[in-house]
Length: 445
Image (cartoon, rainbow, N blue to C red; front, top):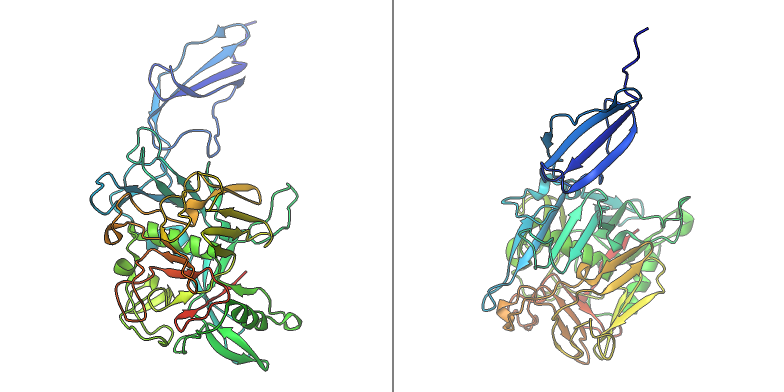
């Protein structure tokens, strides 16, 4: 009787070189003619070499097969930017990068799954004053003080977003608004975050003064943060099933800023997205060029965030500033805090008094199951000291009545229509202060 020569085992090797000195995956097991891999088993976008051989009980170990060369496609749903500030006498520049840290020559943000998933929704439509919101789908982010070694971004600050979880990525903190734990012991992360499409206006709903979000309304200003929060609380009506309205906060702002930065690879938000040309104190909502348009055109947006900068300063929640010390409150439990500045850890190179924010790298913030980095919130300026050359002119002021942060713009006087003022937002640190140009915005879980 002829003996069987059917193999009993299979050996597989995959390496980054044809000599198989750098093996990234190896497997020995029962005989098979195919092998499945899951995402993360093999690196993206590099040349890979594979070979296989079989083992038989009577024939022994066979010869290695012919080597096959291939690549795992770089995911298109991951996009990022790095900041190049190598020219210390000029404003820094940004470049799009893929997941490997290598430059991408172009990027159509409206075709990216995260941006394409941004929609407009209407809440509370039946109480006489519907709330128009912009809904952002959950996305994952990654930040690095230095890009991958050997890549275009090596040695440079990097920001990435992804519509899918990838190694080293975490859900952005703005989606972490739950203390509920699933069966695997992981905190539940929201599928989306909703931000008021327009700056807040005063509305009367159910006999109570509320904050609204609708076009063509007079911006509500000249009141305290406490009053704004009362108006927002009045928006909720548990008995009618209307819940979740809250004040726009620092974590919402961080997510929005990251999306805007990466979409255009440019931190000069007012130039690339459109400025508010009016210097009036109470403009009508949605009446200016100060918008981020995610679908449609800037002149005729179908999905947008309106009333973003200049003449729109903000009371924002979950951040306070007191004598140069910044305190952030967790969006998850609304209790845990992180403080920096003043005499706290030296890694927080925040100015302890008025001045340009210098750097906030390597600053861990634990929220739920993930450790975040303050690069998600504060985008540090370049080494250029001149205000008009700063790539990120985030400014920290501690004036007695206007303590807070100017995000992504300059801090010239808004009242007189001077300069490109306050970037995306000026965030108030003095909760009790009022000013004719300080308003607030709704958000919703």
